[in-house]
Structure formats: C-alpha cells, structure tokens
Length: 103
Image 1: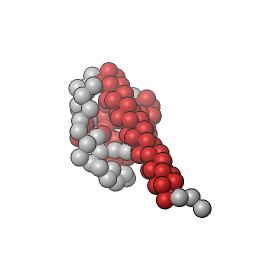
Image 2: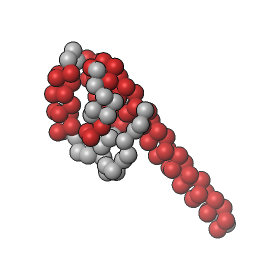
Image 3: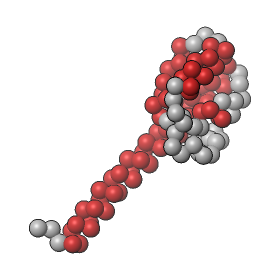
Image 4: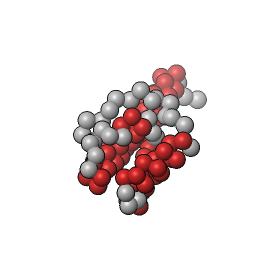
C-alpha cells in the first residue's frame, strides 16, 4: 500500500498531466486561430480582426472545420454564409471571454 506521500505525489503527477494536456490544447487552439485569421486576411483582403468577434469564442474543433471551409469556398460571401451556419450549430466555448489574438 502506498504511503500518504506517494499518494500525494501520484495525485500531483496526474493533475500535472491534465493541466499539461489542457495547456497544449489551448496552445493548439490559439495557433489554429492565428493561422486562420492570417489566411482569411490574405485570401479575402480583410483585416486580421475582421472575424474575431465570432472566432475567439470557438473551440479547436470548430476552428479546424472553418479552416477547411476557408480553403474550399471561392468568395468571402460564401465563407461568411458557411461561418454563420457553422456557428449557429455550435454553442459558444465555456471560456468565451478570451482575449483577441494580436498576430
């Protein structure tokens, strides 16, 4: 049977792993958001922050789907239509008060 110190150590390791995973997911989300913003600005000639009000509330999965959409559509209007549909089907992320990415 593990000692109390060993139990605490193991609990700390597990909590550390979980925190590391969450931080990694958030870093991946931020990187995807930055890349999507830059791609949209280059492809459609909009300002980097043009879609921030919507994009900063989305989770990594939705941002990834939107990245695919950005490659598939032919016009800005088509992207905006698909964005509206996708975000109407997606509830906002739990932490929706995220700051705007400044890249």
